[in-house]
Length: 347
Image 1 (cartoon, helix red, strand yellow):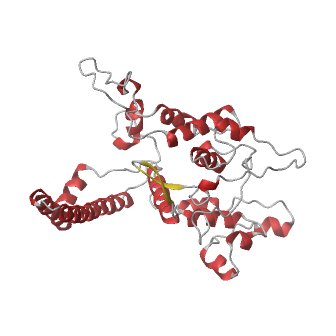
Image 2 (cartoon, helix red, strand yellow; image 1 turned 90 degrees about the horizontal axis):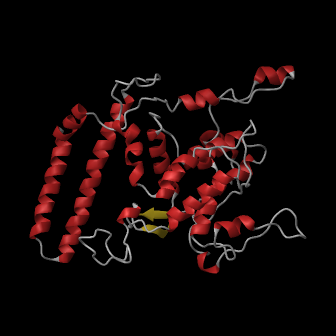
Image 3 (spheres, helix red, strand yellow; image 1 turned 90 degrees about the vertical axis):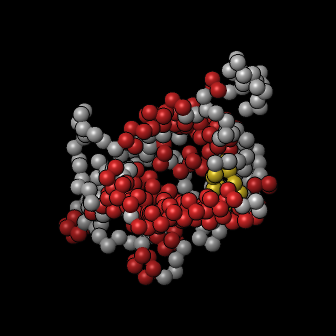
């Protein structure tokens, strides 16, 4: 995103993307897939409203390399990547900070102890691998900013091969760069009972819980809606402080764990969150269940798997998230499916 305007994309990228081995990355790492899902679900194209229409677009006959796709007038001032809430899409753009926070969470769930995965980290990786266009890509005129804040401290130049005129290796620094994030395949994602109990008995936690209880009592006694709203806002801040204490405690506990590279045995206890998704998969939206299978696949754009994932992403973005996911819980002929109830329901 452009630093001056977070609603506007800054850098182009192509539809086809493959790695050095000629194999495309997993679908979850293909930018075009997620861009199209956001654009189509937002009805941002002026002429293409469905996945089929967008994929059927071709360059005009008099220009065989590209087609300029007009933007819908009503969407020109709306962000490409909006902020999402429990009620769905908003008109507020995702900020670099929100991307960084989400990336931090992804890295932690992927068992990295010290995750450094924000927009700056991704941008830095691009600049390290970039060619002579690096300064233009970085939108910087000062080479010192690039050298001091973006380029890696570990040189990736194969000095011996370059001196001898041999084909240089380009992967020399990969291991060093990834090692700084400290992968621990057995990283616990929740506090054990002992740590949780110690946290709850800590002075800060006890004080915050007492404040929450005090505010809850005031909310019950208050009749003024304005005063009640202020108290609820204060309570939300206290809840945020409690969550922060728990996050900090968990981060400290994770830092102290020794890496466990061997898989957990059949009779060994592992973190419950590692298998949580498999236990709740059956209650999720069908499109979400399919995406759990397709997004890790390596597939080229426009392939069957790629198109399936795109349609599911669009469906999720357009679905009413307040509707029950299970088909058996949806209304039948506008009524509750339970025979003894038959209450009229819209959804």
